[in-house]
Length: 158
Length: 132
Image 1 (cartoon, rainbow over the protein chains, first blue to last red):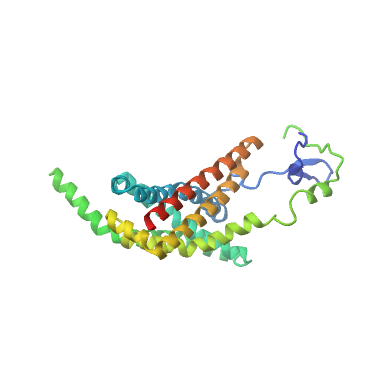
Image 2 (cartoon, chains in turn red, orange; image 1 turned 90 degrees about the vertical axis):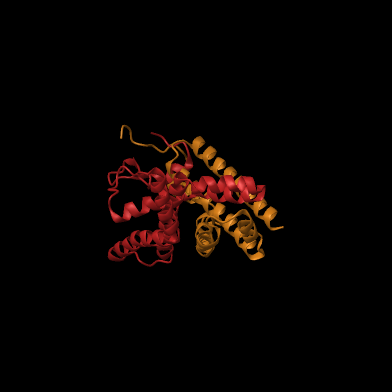
């Protein structure tokens, strides 16, 4: 295995006996136990970030539909209030709150605080619990409408 | 590991490592990711609050009037620009970490940047069209 690219220099280390060894890449999902707080909260931050990046397309769709006029806006609103659309929006809310809270955790680390193991576990649990609480709070105003809708479905079927 | 890696270049390991990155802009990408995340915190919460209490299920007139409010339009533009800067920066790092080939990495990053630019421009045009 020879080095093709000078950027790989940092990826090649030396063992104590002097022989060279290729270092593993950092986000190595196969090596680490992903059920630990540190690795799980870290990879979940990435996953929710990518998910939210896809979800942002909904915001663009909403804005562009609004600029195109009422028919396009109605189409967008109909799609987003469809059960599948709502499921996407709810999932997006959960991903967004997780990524936001985990981002705050990262900003705290970036200023050099909260690296102790007990603090890392505390902030990790705070992010998980905060995600659930804030996601429920975000959708709380929609619950009366959802109950009404479910009742209407039941009435329509009986 | 089938074979030990070898280094076939005349430059010393230290020289190569020192020559790796720019001394001026090395932290710019990382730093702007933090700056946009800090900007997005109030902007996203502002939009989420308005989405829940004003825009959820709103009629076309109500939604258009909300976007047309000068402050709402300005904050929406800021939200869109900061969002797509942060999205492009974040997805770039994900691609850099997982892309197997150098060509795939380059194409992937350029594609992400192109899509982010187009979506950001479309959003800006939409906000301006409704607001002006």
